[in-house]
Structures are given as C-alpha cells and as structure tokens.
Length: 105
Image 1 (cartoon, one colour):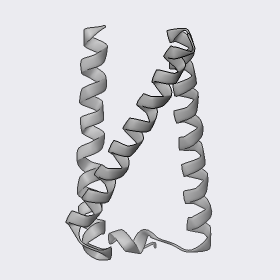
Image 2 (image 1 turned 30 degrees about the vertical axis):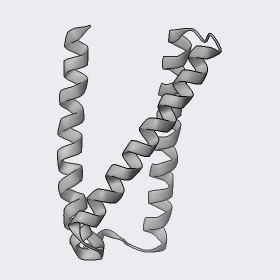
Image 3 (image 1 turned 30 degrees about the horizontal axis):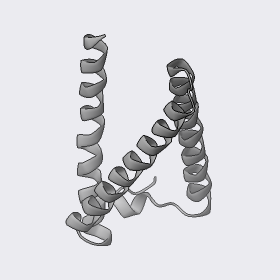
C-alpha cells in the first residue's frame, strides 16, 4: 500500500512539473508566467476543496469506500474524456498550437 502511494505521488510530480513549465511558457505569450501559475493554483485548490466536500457528503451518507473510489474514478475518466473532446473540437475550428510556440506543418 505504501509503495502504491509513493508511486502515485512520484507520477503526479512527473505530470505537474512539465505542466507548470508549459503554463509558464504559454503564460508568457498570453499574460505573464506568474498570472498563469496563479490561476492554475487557484483552480487546483478550489477543486480540492470541492472534492473534499463531496467526499465528506458521501461519507456522511454512509457510502462504502469502494463505491466512493469508483465514483471518483468514473468522474475523473468522464471529465478527461470531455476535456479531450473539447480540445479536439477547438483544434478543428482553429489551431491553437501557435499559442505555445508550436507551428503545425
């Protein structure tokens, strides 16, 4: 169990660090690097509080822990699917890769 927690934490770090670098680069193009990171941190903390409140409500309603884990997993999967679909739709309308310094060939 401890190994799994350490693995998830390490993999999350491998995701967050490049994401922050991308946001700083893109933020420099659109606003400023600091503003982009500040908005990201605000959204992350707001969503952590919302998910914690949802978790507390499920615990209060006596949901089994396996049910809670499954519901959160399904929620994350569906949300990521919606984000991917929206990104593909936006890319079809207008190529946004130029915003991060990548030109489409």
